Each structure stands twice: as structure tokens, then as C-alpha cells.
Image (cartoon, rainbow, N blue to C red; front, side, top):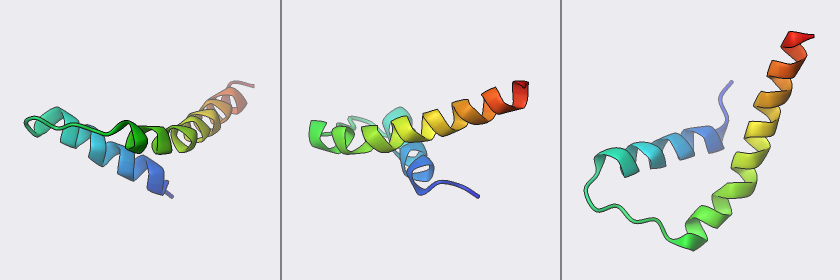
Length: 52
């Protein structure tokens, strides 16, 4: 199962890496941050659980 935020952030990264003169507005980026942070926490907890 994939996360919608993961897919969206991946698309934005691709856009930022490969499209000329891409600019993201601060309001866009701020709206992505809480979801991205939650996603990272979930992935980190999965790694931690796998180590135990």
C-alpha cells in the first residue's frame, strides 16, 4: 500500500529536479510538512520495530 502524500511528494521532487525554473510557494510547502513528518515517523517506527 502506498501513501497518497508519498506519491504527491515524489511527483513534486521529480518536478523540482527535472523541470526548468520550478518554484514552490511557501504555503504549498507548509501544507505538505505535517503529512511528510507523519510519514517519516511511521517509516522510522517500522525500521525500529524490525530491529527488535
